[in-house]
Length: 278
DNA sequence: CCCCGGGACTCCCTTACGTCA
DNA sequence: GATGACGTAAGGGAGTCCCGG
Image (cartoon, rainbow, N blue to C red; front, side, top):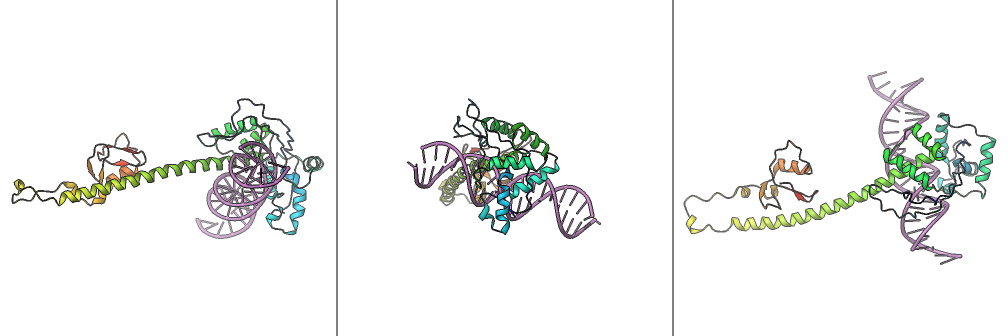
């Protein structure tokens, strides 16, 4: 895979050697989700080395050409970038792939085969964050324009957005997990409470009727005693028993998002909002 | 109209580098 | 100085969609 035809390129060879870190007050690059518990050092000096993927391509392509497993060249592999950058050629952003590119590669690839890690400057990160807040995805034109603006290659912008989406999703997953955990706890507690309630109701049912009420006509049990226990819900705030059934379940499934036109009067407990929707 | 191959795009997992404690 | 944890750029596979043959 990694050894597919390598098209070395000289576009975007932004050897942007910029010292970041001076950006006082600049937002930390990692805006994680909606909440931002960022722990990034705000004054981290950033050395932007916009190294072209093709930089290591020569050695990589030849080194892995023998059909070695991807792992054997993972530190150098450029297959995906090559594939992608060929696509970018179609966009016309590519100029040539000859001498200039080779010179740049030599400059970048000074120590041979190590994969250098790009560090975005604070300015670059801030702009990327801004764009991400507007749209979490980029169309090709936006990508190229942003890359030009940032002095990066489109592929790098694309990767940044990819990783950014992944971080956002991870953060959201953590938040969702926390919510579900709380829901589970709430439901467990609710279940305990209902079990107790059920026991009390059962005990009530078997209390012998008082002698004064010992008419020939047996007292009608409360309506909720005629319902299966599982269908009963008790509003925790008003302590009233409501019939369950589909309607209540439906309301509960709505998550309490009762529309303005809703006329349902069931009392139920919504574990997702931790409140009774009375 | 359906099928198929290929390109483009995205997501996901993984790797590797740089930084920090 | 060595080391492990962590953040993140980047590589690569897989899935999906679209389009032309």
